[in-house]
Length: 126
Image 1: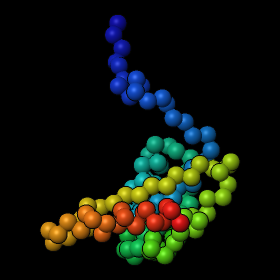
Image 2: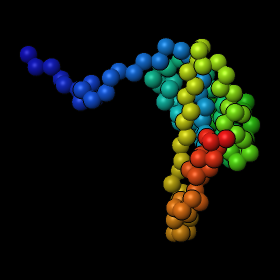
Image 3: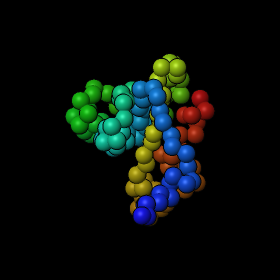
C-alpha cells in the first residue's frame, strides 16, 4: 500500500562508476577508505598511499596485503600520483584527517594554516 520514501533519491541522482577505481589515499592511516570501498563491493585497486607515520603504514600494509612505503606529503606533487590513464580508470583521491592535531595542548593548531589539511592546498596546486 505505502512504499518507503528515500530522501536521497529525491535530492541527488544515482552515481555510477563504470571503470575500475584506482584509489589514492592521502593521510591513509590504516586504510578506512579502502575498507569502505571493499565493504561496498567496489571494483578498486590500492593505487597510491601517502602516509608519513611508519606504524600506520605498517598497519595499512598488514590489513590490506600491500607493500607501500611511508611518504611525506610535503615532498611530493600532484603529478607524482601517476594519474595517467583516465579513459580506463576512475581515480578516486581521498584524505582523512584526525582532529588530534587541531587541538594540540589546547592551542588549536588546526586553525590559521598550521594543520595537515593546509598541506593539501599546495599539493593539489603543484
